[in-house]
Length: 439
Image (cartoon, rainbow, N blue to C red):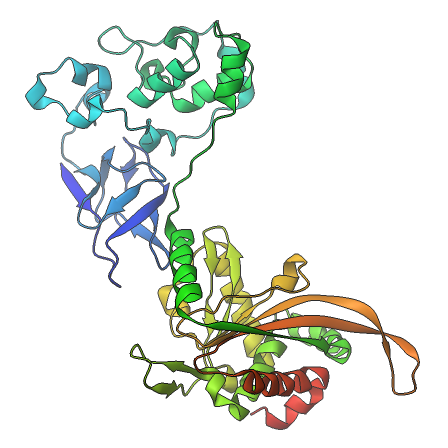
């Protein structure tokens, strides 16, 4: 039997969250086969099997925290332990542990941890609702090795909270084991309970508690740090992007012919990189002692993406050197990876200035928080068709979007960011002028 311990992933990471087990206890695995996905403070990491074998135990359930250098799963190396009876594989059932001598028992099994058999249930395909309902009342009851219905302490506690008898819940686990999902399914179906209606209502109204982990926990810490240590000030402006929209429509077919989706983001980025050349202070940062200004040689523009793992801000490296088409490809790649929570660490590091396109979700304006150690971030609102006066005082329809800058007031003053925003705005309102500076 071999134990696989969570390796040191680097970057000072000491723990990670189990996002998804790709295998279950008892499964055969091949060398380099994906076994589990874990979420660190930086990104989603896939861990593969070191060698072929058979999984005997998953130590950390889905959604729980694993520590570096602690056991993640155990397995039998292929060729070892052949001929064992299936009932003797893996962990000793809870009921048999309770009857074992104290010195051989896992003390944690006597503690109501609130964690049920997630290590196996999380990887077992869900039973269809119709199949579950069809088993209620007429299915044979499974029994554990000591004549009892298997269930974890957490499941038994859930049954007590809802005044349910273990015998009344059909178990979908091995040997008829009652899982947490089985109990929740019965509650959803409105099965008659012996408790008073008021007690059932109180139980159903309990507050759901979810741990703050992974990217969301990192975002929470960084936002608190940025908001409390950086003196923010905000500056808003409206930009007429009518001509920019028309230019994009003309260029979209050419981009699509090369399997690239052309959005407004590449234009925002390219104009930003050009404006930074005129105002390099926006692409600088302060050292930790706050006594030096470091002007950065490359414009690496981050873009906030609301992914399934939480807010991520991957950045496009060297925007000043890239064409609009190359920018479109890179933003397309990073957006897709961020939404799936699979951005590599290199794409998350080294950002120099950020864009938050809140308008993609419908917001008109926002007051963003700086992504430290950067010194500025802009929130872009949705584009609206609004009436405006032309040069002859005629009312015309124009595409207007609102942008809101947040600046680090230790380094940037209002006049600087206003002039910088004017330069950026000029490129966006007359996008053909960018052609003069494209390499």
